[in-house]
Every structure is written in structure tokens, then in C-alpha cells.
Length: 581
Image (cartoon, rainbow, N blue to C red; front, side, top):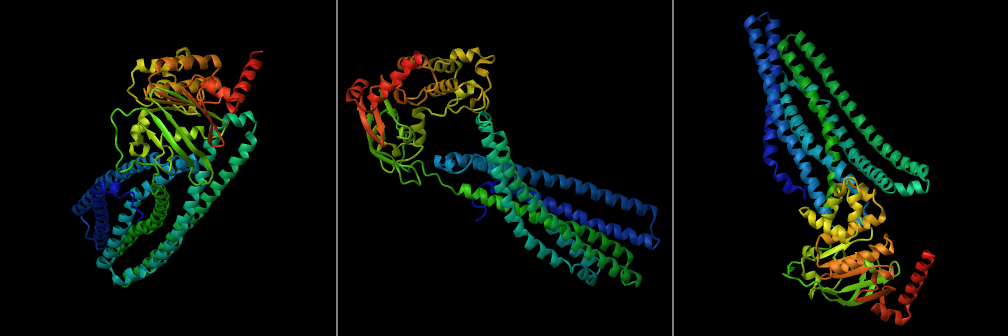
């Protein structure tokens, strides 16, 4: 069913739509009264029966009709158009909320530009269908049917039937061209996706583009997708451009029939002059419903194409969700245990982790080191249930992770990711991201622990400094430390640092680690790093190699093994010595 995801939203506005449709009908009914008034006026003029009193009477009737039409047109706009705008708001909110529930893998498979196109162009097309599309359907249907009825009853059946001969050709035209519009509009939306994706990637990677002097190549690449977008739009415009003139041309045939046949009937005195004038006015009213057919088909086909694309997203179901028996445990202990865990990312056959086992007690520090791609970050993702292991091989507080509410798991953990993503808002808001009501004292304390307080205070606006996209106006080290402050400000029981000190110098790193040991000594800590200096004081260190735990122990125990850890440490000592020299 096309409206399967919008039924509940639409129900909330059905009263508005019902009243809006009634106001449209009343407005159209008043318009249908005007030709009759002008027909009687024409008869009075033709038969020389027009008096001063009748002129005032006709003026009053026409003015009253105009006022009534204006009032009811305002009312239906207030009902239907406002409802369509609110519907747009609700659909966009539903789409955004649904996207937040989907797995990380979904965002790896779908570009940001594509999702932006769905949230803008597609929803705008749906809004047009539920706004002016509904209006045009009711308006053209009621006005068209009642106009034809009036033409038959008030004028002449034969003349009406002759004038309506071209109408089936209009229906055939809209049926044929309507399918083409939907198909071509789908191509337009896909082309728009490519443009938004390209623009988003180019702006996000502008620093790289300039560093490699690739502006001209990027221009060519953008021109290519932009040209494809233009061609898709022009292809759609050609159909729309054919439809409207063709419908108008066919409807003009009706006018020619009315003038020729109706004029002869007046000459032969088989049709009163006033009725002829009334018929011509009705035929003029009929022009709008005929023209609206093409417009309605265009808008509805676009809306249907867009709704199908939105439905495709809303049909996606999150693979990670709370089990029916999931529970929230009071005073959940911040202990983490992996029991022979093996894991493959969705839609892949390569194992990222194999037979991983460890137990991290509350208040202890676990360090994870290993080559790039050995699965270090995957362990953090699994703990936070950004991805799910197939069995109950992960326990938190002694409970299998899938028996716990996702919200409790993530509230328990403060995470500092590798990419140090910052939002385009104030530094204060970035640090207080997990709790907008966080006190200034807590924000300042977190920034001091992260060793970034002094630098923030050196900015003209201090904590109210507005950051650019992804914190572009900060250095890599500043972004890392603000990300650490954000995680600490949450006051989590478990703190995960995922290679989050790589952009700071060793002196600053030592200071941050000392502060962390003092200020968050009661928290369970997982530190993922490449530099041995970052993790040498951990209670336990595990070394990942070939997706398995190759070595484990304390710093001194691992050095004594003379394996990967020992070799890495020696190389880093040599690098530090060379850098100092």
C-alpha cells in the first residue's frame, strides 16, 4: 500500500482536509452561480428589459458572489495548504527519526547526498501532492462535473455533447503522458542525488582538493553530474511542455464547436441569447478543470514517485534493537567480558575478529594495540552495540549485552572516536552534547581534564566560540581534546578512547593520561592506541594480530615476550630519539 507509512500522520489532519474540501466545494458552487446571473443580465439587455434597479440587483449579486468566493478560498487555503505544510513537517521528522534507528551499515551503503535529496526534494513533492494536488483534484472534479451538469440543464443537451467530444482525447493524453512523467521524475530525483552527493563531498574535502591542486578536475567532475541533472530535468520539462499546450489545444476545439453551433442556434432562435452567453461562460469555467488535469497528473505522478522512494527508506528495519525481554538494570556494574567472540561485518565473508576473550573489571584499564585493520575499533563498536555479534559472547555487568536496553548500554559508556567529529555549533554545546543542561562548572572541569581549557579561554568568544563544519577552525589536537572533554562531561562509568591522543604531542599526552588516572580513576577504561606510551600503564594490554589476540599481559610482561609488542615499542623509542635529536 502506497500510504502504509503515512496513515497515522494523515489521520491527524483528516478533519482539516474534510473541512478544506467542503470549503473548496462551496467556493466552486458560488462560481457556478455567476454565469446564470450574467445570462439573465444578457437576456434583459437583449430584450431591452434592463432597468436601473436590475443593474443594482445584478451588481449586488456579483459582488456578494465575489466576496463569498474570496472568503471560502481563504478558508480552504488555510485548511488544506497549512495541513500539507504540517504534514511535510511530520514526514520529515518521521524520516529523520527512522534514519537514526538504522544500522551504521546503512549509512555506509547510502551517501549523505542521497539522504539529503530524500529529506528535501522528495518530501517537497509529497507536500505538493497533499497540498495543491488535493485542491486541484477536488476543484477540477467538482467544478468540471457541475459545469457540465449546468450546461446540460440550463442550456442545451445537444450543444453540450458536441462541445464535449474532444474530452476523451484529453483523458487519453493524460494517461499516456502521466506514466512518462513519473518515470522521468524518478530519474530527475536520482540525478539530484548525484549533484548533492558531489557537492557535499567536494565541500567536505575542500582542504584535500586544494592541497592536491585538483580544482579543475573537480570542476570537470561536477560539470558531468550537473549536466546529467540538467538533461534529466529537460527530459521531464519536455513532457510537461507537451502536455499543457496539447490539452489547451484540444479544449479550444470545444470553444470552436460552441461558437459555430451555438451561434447558428441563436440565429435560428432555437437558443435564447442569454442561454448562449451562459453556455459560453460555463465553457470558460470548464477550461480551468481541463487545464488542471495536466497539472494534477504532473504533481501526483511526482508525489507518487517521491513517496515510493521515501517508503523504500521507511521499509528498512533496524537490525539492532531492544529484545522483547530486554531490561534496565539498576546499578549495572561497569564490567565488560568477551567470551570467544568471532565477528564478521554484514554482507562480508571475512572475519574481523576471531575467538576474542577477555574480562575487564570495574575501575581497571584495558589497552588494545595492533596493526591497522586488526579489529581494534570493531571491539569498541560491539561493546556499544553499533554492530551485533551473532551470539551472547559479550557481557556487561555479568549480563549478556542483548538482554540490556540499548539506551542503558550507551548511557553507561563515554566514547571518543577516531574521527573526532564536532558539530557546527558552540564549543560549549559540543562538550555538553550528551546533556544540554550541563552546568558551566562541569563543562569547564571536563575541558581541564582534557587539557584544552587554556586554549579555549584564549579564543575571543571562549566557550561560546562557534565552530565551522566538523570543527574545521580547530587543529587536530584541539578537536581530539574537545572530543575527550565531551565524553568525560557525560560522567560515564566506562570510558573508551579510540586512538584519541594521536594528534597531540607526547608531553600533552602524558599530562592528559595523568589527569585521567586521577580524575576518572573510578571508571572502567578501554584505551585503543598505536603508541605504546599511551597504554604502557594499563592494567592489561592485549595485542591484536591477524584478527586474534596474539599477546596479552602488562607492559613489562609483553616486553619480556620479545614479540610484536616488544618490536613496536623498540621502534617507537628509536623514532622518539630521532625526533628529539
